[in-house]
Length: 218
Ligand code: B12
Image (cartoon, rainbow, N blue to C red; front, side):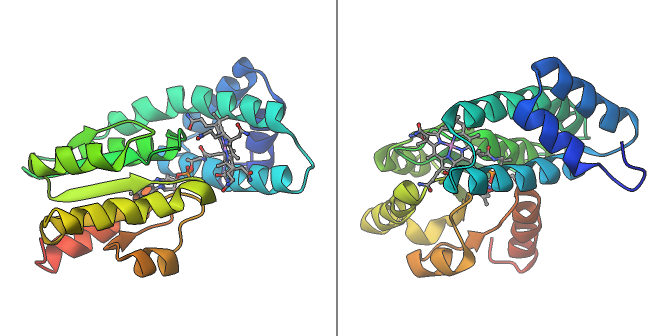
């Protein structure tokens, strides 16, 4: 454990090669030493980007990604209760429909967004993963101020645009703030497809929603 913040090397090492028990021991050690959940989640996200690059370069293979994924899930089992124990704000009476788009089953990042939104007092309708555009539209039609969509793969990025196009075709685009995120998504891409909010992390998403609301747009 490093004295100045979490030792990323240790976290990365156990996430990539450690057992469940190793991951839990290291994460519990960080938490016991006062490292907060936000810092740990940001560190995991950075580690995962590195893991993705190693995979792209052929330095690691799918079994290691699977192992890493199991590692993140073990880490999250300890980190999520920390987040959830944060005081929940008063209900905002605003609904967020959120999900990972069709064809994509990555949901770790989306689940973090869901928890933070709930803590901030939003009513979150989490549609899960591999969610078809039609399901987003149906749920938004029941009433929602925000629509959050996650895409972790270049092959599913265009589905974000399909949902936005569907909102337009259904004449409900103006009533909903569309938020997009996930590893391959960028601000430039979000602008191109006409999303309202893009953020690289779930925490930044919360800041941007706050700005949106204080600017009076919603
Ligand atoms: C873990 C993982 C898996 C796990 C997923 C487990 C789960 N329940 O999610 C498993 C092992 C199942 C998996 C499967 C696959 N994976 Co995978 N996976 C990853 C990995 C290593 C980490 C993703 C992760 O959880 N990161 C940690 C979280 C905390 O970060 P995050 O997701 O980025 O989320 C944060 C932000 O992005 C943001 N955010 C996320 N969503 C949203 C939404 C909104 C609205 C906002 C505002 C913000 C926001 O906030 C989050 C918190 O701060 C990535 C590598 C990477 N760099 O992303 C590859 C990666 C995404 N996978 C990849 C691939 C190819 C696959 C498979 C196709 C592999 C295969 N051949 O079977 C399958 C996909 C199956 C499918 N159809 O979806 C590729 C995608 C390449 C591409 N085409 O773009 C990647 C990039 C790895 C790589 N470099 O090749 N994977």
